[in-house]
Length: 283
Image (cartoon, rainbow, N blue to C red; front, side, top):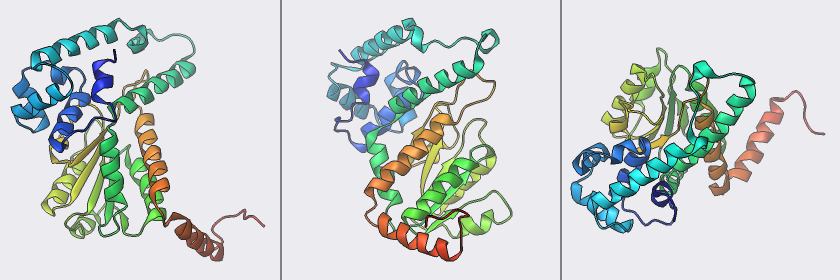
């Protein structure tokens, strides 16, 4: 029998938007968000209690109490599995390089478990819709993720802009229009500037997509879509390897879904050749 986590992340689940919010809330801090009263989970997900009831019945449970029993059983199995236990950092001995890379592999598996295919589909649809502009913002350490994604988005389509944390930021935010997509990368320790960007975007009726960790980011309540990745590592510092993998997976998906990509790349390469962009060119 599949674990509860596997059950709620099954790609074939036919979920309503409200039910997807519940799944997202459960995965954001699994399993804690599902262990309290149903009203608390509903509040966290921003839905009504009846939505929770409909979802647990759709998942095959007789009620919320039975759902929580399955959650506790799943949690007990996870806690007993050595593969899910990380040693305290102070006790790490031996080949730290290898241990760190191995821990990144586990974090990537965790990232996949946190991903809802429907969220990816919606995000791709928004990003490939040329009627609306795309704006990217990143924090102190995550700005490279925003810029990396932006550089690729410009290959797929026009109308993609950087929201850089400088004196021009208010000017750029003023140009954000209704239904534009604002991508915000913000991980703990959440930055006040990211919150200001998200607030300004919502005030201009843009759609906010938040790339963040599994914890209680203050931007979550402002986001129309949340892409979550773990950041814990055996290092004294958080890892952005899972977040980068999310960005590259998104780029791969967009590349296969953009019919104009080949034509755009050909035209861009022709212009690059005129400007001798690359030092080494194929003859």
